[in-house]
Image (cartoon, rainbow, N blue to C red; front, side, top):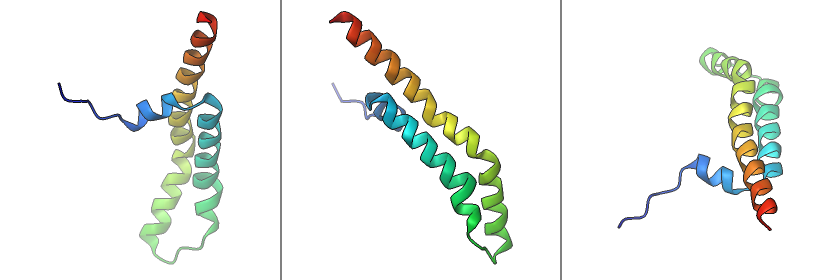
Amino acid sequence: MARKEKTVFTWLTELSWWINVCLAAAVYGLLAFGLPAFHYENPAAKGFVDGLYNLAPVFAVLFLIPAVISAVNAWQKRRKM
């Protein structure tokens, strides 16, 4: 039987919950504050970065969902011991 490739979401759920929270904070900080701090002369690049600024909370939540799953898995593992 062939092994199924792991997705990024599966890989993130196998990490510790606090790593996912740190990743979510880093992604939010990069998209909301890091990229807009640069000066873009190209109007298309500026528009793209402005769009990412508006979507920063969405991307952060996408990294928080695996954090919740990872925390629940860790809690269940601890209860079994």
